[in-house]
Image (tube, rainbow, N blue to C red):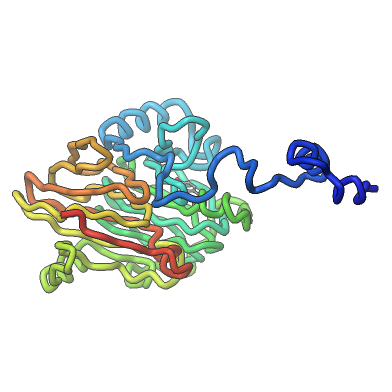
Length: 318
Ligand code: GTQ
Ligand code: FE2
């Protein structure tokens, strides 16, 4: 039992601290470090990974490990900060994945939401989501919302490469993780590409034709994904010679290059990108993109989380 009289009668702050310690209280005036600060200051760094490096690494992995052993043959893009071994950003993780001809990546489901941007696939690469087979085409964005069964297969003659995006780090923070395995690949009940989980490059390009540039200088469309409440998806067009404004936002963003070349300035660094490269942009970095060739950028953002919680802020710095 606590000696509450001794506690109540503590003669000085030093004694009080000693008495509070074993009760697992920490006096606010003894804080080791501030708990509040003026504006966002994340540990996560802006960083870029090259698709060419990932492809070479995945090709090696294709010789060295099969899809059954690996569950998924993927290369996670791990933010190079101390103590981090997984996350690309505070809330999101991204990975390059490859599947060889004749392979299947068995069906599973998990509470984290996942989606893919298809990079290089010949025909007969597919994903099966809740029994619906979707054949992959380059530039597709394919959704696998939380707890939907999903597995992949390749009946073609060439490896298939794509980029995965998941909100696993957010689920790690909040801790509602659930994960189940199917025995093998879920049987196909239906084959279609006309589904709310499928966004084709052709429809993206058609919609962009009519898109207006917003007040922040972004010509982009949103891929409407109400099944994925944590993430907002955009396709942004930037023509050769154009730059965006310099923007700061509370959101954490991942950008992958669907086509074109250019540079991104963030956190005092300049990243030079080309098709398939992926850049992570942690909260509150001033970011500016410039295209040297007509470019299409795919953006995955945790903005809906910030909006729902009332934390979203966006400002132009120029
Ligand atoms: O394809 O289901 O890159 O569950 C990471 C986790 C891909 C997938 C990843 C996954 C998947
Ligand atoms: Fe998965």
